Structure formats: structure tokens, C-alpha cells
Image 1: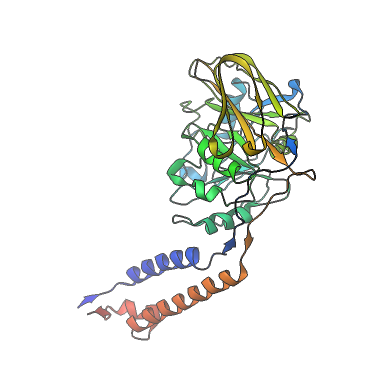
Image 2: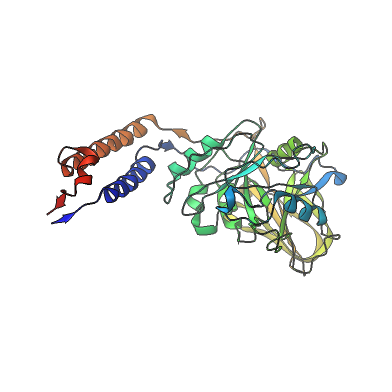
Length: 394
């Protein structure tokens, strides 16, 4: 006969609640079957960009916050000063579940925070919102959990970015063939390059655009500083202009080589679509150029060139380009893809009411069952029965 302490029952109840709320009470979704990009029209995100309007951006950097509880060193001002010195036009502080307002008077200011406090780093970056969403699921998430969070994060005219999906399988390729209601993917991060995950989303017909971020947590030491960036075409030179460009794909990601001078980063000159051919040119000669299409299939490669042209066929569905230079720098362009004449229409997952009701009913039954166990173990006195030291398990 061993006494069962109150704290043990409370801990067990908390764990039980985490399991029930996440796996039984969460909304259940109907996910449309993955369908590749189709149609007679080619969407080219770069067809209306102006060369003088490219702005170098970083949206993901952590300062010290929450009295040092979260991982971040240095102040928001330190972050802004560091990125100013590296000639970034837009630089954001993205603390966990906290919107930093330093430099909010500037035209290019963007309110940003990183969402997520779960065990598998299924995190999101929310750009342009004035509200922090606290809902998350602590344990390894199902695709239904992930979609529920994305639906809660969605706001009109904001941008939701899936952060570093390749880390800890935060977002699997199977997830990305189903999920919707987000705008961009952090394909480029010092922690992981997630091109396979990006191709999984694109192959399912999801209009998802590239973002590159440093995700620095220590601006003082300079760890990760200036390693990745996103170039955004922003003629308005405003924060809202950045959001609009990201949603439209008028952007591209760059991974900086170790010896890359900040004053001579290779840049995109043009992407042109003429009938069934695509022409791309950058400012410098690349060591290798690769074009990828449906399911990550290689459409064409070239070496020692600053340009590439290729035939874009309907069964390619989409085509995206990577330019890799001898010093390790890489340019990752957004895809061109086929759409109907009426334009791209996102196919969004929706809540399955019958399945949701069934799972929630099961959850309520499980809660009642657990409460019955607690009541019985306490001798009918609730948690007060545990304070007497009389409770025993045989």
C-alpha cells in the first residue's frame, strides 16, 4: 500500500488533458486531393518587377525577451543596427509570441512574431498582424493540429510563413501535400535548407513562395548573421508593400557564401515567359544552374553561365530555378506555374463536422472516464481526498 500524492494525480491529469485536447478535441479536416498546377496561362511572379525596387530583407531574428526565458541575446536595437550595417532595407525582430515595436515609426516597419511552443519545432512566422495567437499543440502534431493552427493564424492581408520545415520533421512532405492557408515557406535557414519540402507543396498545387532568413538568436556574437536573406520587390518602400510582394511572389531567396562580399551579391535581372519558353538571367556567372519541376524532377541544368532558357511543358506543372556560384552563394527563385484563365484559386482544407463531432464526443467520454477514476481513487472526496494520505493503490 503506497500513498498516491495529490501532485501525481494533478500531473497525470495535466498530461491526460494535453493528449485529449490535442488528439480528440481538435477540429478534424477534410483535405482536398493534391492536384498539380494546371491551365493554359503561365503565372510569372517577376513579370512586373522593377530592377531599382529590390530590397534586402530578414524577417526572422530573436532578441532577449520574456525576461530571458526564451532563446535570444541582445536587444531589438542591436538587431536593427547589425542589419543596417549589412545593408538590409527591411529587418524584423521576431520574438516568440511577442510583437516588438522598436522602429515602428519607420515606413518599412513590420510587426512580426514567431508562433509555436511545441516539441517538434512546428513553428510559423506571422508578418503584419497586431495580435498574438496563443493556441498551439505541445506534443507531436497531426496534420489536423497543424491545419487548425494555420487557420487560427490567418488574417486578411497578413503573411504566414512556415518556419524551417525540415527541422525535426516540423512539417513533413506528406503534410505539405495537404496543408493550406499559408503564404510562404522558410526554405532557406542556417539550420536547414527545405527545398524538398517546398517541392512537395508546389507539386500538390499549393502556391507557396520562398523566404530566406537568418533565424539568429545571438546578434551579439554574430552567429548566423547575414547568412540568408530575401530580396523583395517593393516599389512602395513600405511594410505593407513587403507583404503584398511576398503574397504575389515578387521575391527570391539568397544563401550567402562564406566569402560573399555584401556589396556584390549576385542578383536577378529578369524572368521572361514567351509562349512555351522561359528565359532567366542573373547578374553574375553561376557555376551551376538547375531548373526543377513537378516532384522535384530536374528539367534542365547548365554550367558556367549567367542565364538559362528552357521549354516549359504542361506536364512540368511548375518550374523553379536555382543559381549556385563558386563562392557558395545561391539564388532560389520562385516558380512559374500554370493556372486557369481565371487565375489561381487556392483549394483550402475545410472542417469535417461529422468527424469532428465524433472525435470530440470520444474526448468527452474519455474525460468523464478519467474524472470517474479520480473520484473513485479519492474515495468520493475529489482532490481533497489526496491530502489525507489515506489513498492507496493495491
